Length: 359
Image 1: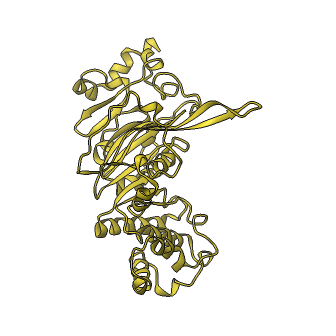
Image 2: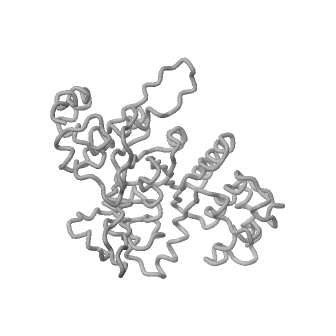
Image 3: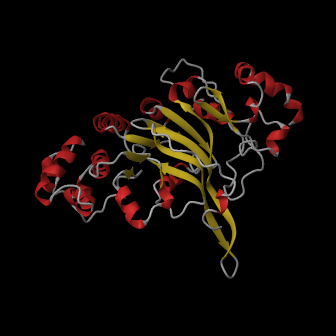
């Protein structure tokens, strides 16, 4: 599969200055090798047609089950996973995958990532000052005479003390290591940061500190985050918009308040029903999904979710649903909403009952 082969039927998006990032039908497939000559026998469709826009200074939460493609989407946007298979990634109006090596190097300082595991993402052979300052020196962010003061300032902003400079990662706790990871990303004066589950490996009490730190830094430096997480409560707290991924595709996208108050897609409803409620007397109406996630190497025809959906209709098995705007800024990819939006929004269950006999 050659670069650009999937772009033949793509309708390019035009740059809108209010968005720092515009992702249009992004695809990332990984080849499956087989046979004596290791020929390509198929593709793992890790990211399959993801579309969203991200406004400057805001946070978008990206949620979904393990293996749905969240991390791959983040890495593909940053051009860390080789070439894309198809689609567009516009950062400040520039196609990231059309940049030369020199242009990409200049852009690296504006796009950063905080990795999931603070234990394995830090070099055990470098002291903290070198971990944070290595890229600063490489990209000539500040003059040599200002280097030490600049590193101290970044460390202070991230809750680290000056005497931590000469210590090594193994001497820190998990929360402190994640602060080092945040400082490393912040040191390059980025505009956009992919936060790849930055608190999943931390204790709950430490999670709150890191989340608050990220919000403080966002207000201070006007940062834009793509926040990838399994924890829906954290996403609700930190995000302005939310995207829900399933098997490489975005099934629902909108403002955080709209998504949590009025989830539309059956998969989103099932995810939200699993959020724990801190009230032992509250009755939980859990939606249990049957079966397991299909293989991304051989996804189902039609709607990818139809094999596990309680509202599955006959058309779901062969017809791919399109993205529809049900209310301003609230998009969903589901055949339940193919009728008049107002009618379906009020009675989606009734429509599902009428078609139950055709499953």
